[in-house]
Length: 201
Image (cartoon, rainbow, N blue to C red; front, side):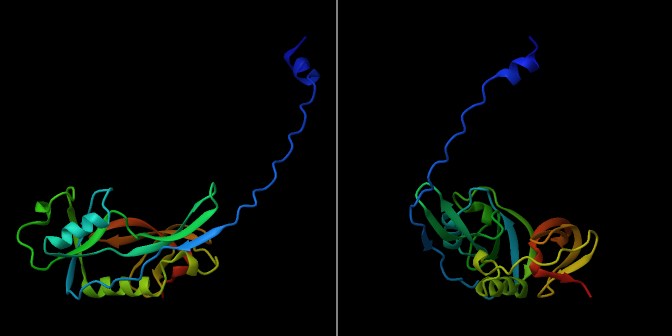
């Protein structure tokens, strides 16, 4: 008897009954906190922190006499097991922060228990203020993202709606676009929501 014949002669398995859907109510919590604007400065250093950097890391940098600020996004986290959904704040760029010297003595690398920070460049205070204003307007909040729209052709020149950054499209769909931006004297691919971009004039 061939293997094919044996497989075809097997009795058909009994169809499995579908489990009844859970009727647990869905609890939605808002755990986000208001935007805190950065101090007014002419220049900020862009510092790469360790992957484990958290609010405690920023607090130690601040206590050492440095101004430190990190933009945040509001995202949704959920637990299907208990039927809970919460909106929470997460760093917009998890490993990066804007740092400026306030009344610090010594180097940022001397601060206790913050890993090995690496300064990758500097930006103007106007740019940091503009990012903070966008966070305040809810542009990084998943609850206020507009519906998906038109995508861009590969190689198209695009810029953000506020005109602060411009680059070349590497890949695009109706929700996300990968753009090659010039950041800190190097070209870096950045994922941007397609609705936050426009064709560069």
